[in-house]
Image (tube, rainbow, N blue to C red; front, side, top):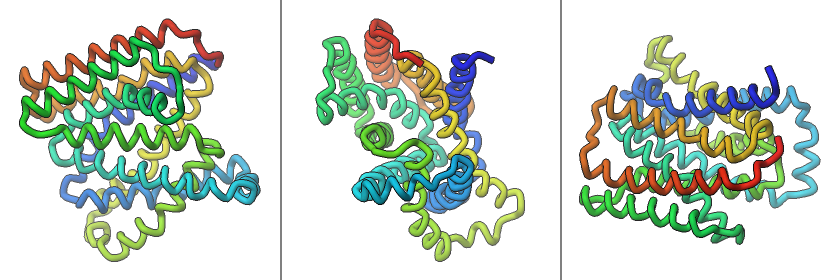
Length: 289
């Protein structure tokens, strides 16, 4: 298979796994969300460590000696990533799959605005209009539904902030992910040591589901990292909407969450912004694989 085809397949697989997360997390509805989050961290670390060992991670120690500030940088990234996972787990196990999908629809637009505000990246007129349309959709839903869509905002803001920190991090994907998990591991392990009775009292099948949190967390991240190097960013940007589309379909069709005209207007404004954003991205010169 050509490299570009493998990269596209990897990207589609990563986004599809993220998009069908509700099918997995709904099996763990009886487990407190913080316990599920802690299991994600604890079971992810050995896998990332294995990948790092396979890639010969000795250079990671040398890199940290040269750049000790990387530890604080990735510590902040780890806090945002774990916070994002926590909101994601809670939303998917408490009947808010549609709200989660909205967060992932607006995340790329928020990332563009954050890059312009923090990194000084140029913001084209169509991109600015796209961000304003998405913001209008969020404001409309808050006004129409009588409450701010905090789940969508928290997911979008935490992942956009994480993306910004990872973009400016001095380490690669595997090295950075290992450090993030290593920094979060002590807190997660300590929490499970004092609040992890669910695991000990569970059946073997339930323990297997909790342990599967590691592979289901790490696998799409590695697939995404593989795809990012093999296809243009414009293509990757369009493929990322597989995730919120699947979430929205599952939330409405399978879990029968509310999606009325008020939601439709808000989502339509966001989708219009996305259409402008993708049109602008397609007009850009493709990034060489």
